Image (cartoon, rainbow, N blue to C red; front, side, top):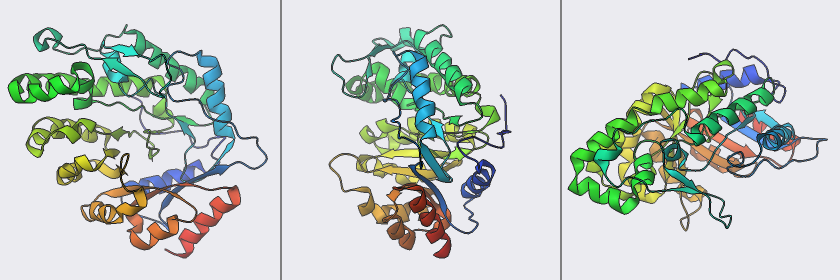
Length: 361
């Protein structure tokens, strides 16, 4: 696998080298003169261009989607440590589709898709395999290559939302049946997890190579950048299981993923998963938590105590914010352990945010 992020400049990010240095400091929980802040704004003098819809490229012609990706990135001001990037996706269950499940697109556009559970007999299904001729796998690789061709010298192609480990089994088996399997046939789930864990590296590497990330670095769909490799890992299925089951099946898989990546962010989805906080924060190579409160819960800014708790456990926190509420977070959180993902209304406002952070750090 190519290593190292050897590209030193990007058309949409003239200060790419400076941003790299600050990202490396972030991963080491260090700062120069201010916390890490990826701040984006509309680019002055450029007509705004909306990015492609979620899952664009799954069924559309690549050409028009790729053009929209580049045009949208060109219309954004990528300030501070914001890295111009685009994350391809064929939906949350795309890994299961690459392993043979049928990808289902509903007639009414709900903004997502899913796969139809396909495992009835574990003995027949195992071991899980990645068929290099699988239609959706080949299409993703072709999409990444087309994106990389167009993005070269301008921006980067981020790695994809993998929903690996137990989330893959959830998609392929179905939630109710998988939950019963954990109780009735735990030894079978041991085999299933061993099988799916073995696919993480070849899947990651295949996409990494197709998108030529080795020359420029990458980020996950949570846009945290590293000049070698990184991604966002997760286990949403953790919301349905207790600590003992999490430690037996999910935790070893997440530890392997984080160790392979070296540095990564965790997508922490909802209060139901908080029972696993200590275990998740024990994972080496996992550096940053992206807390997501979930629907019908208090907004992000109301979870300040949790963000402080995560920092106290040694992990940095991702903070979505604007030019005003970033000041609230800055008063409360450790500046060397925060990733501000900020949106400003103008280039001037974006630069003022960065100056304010320097003056108040």
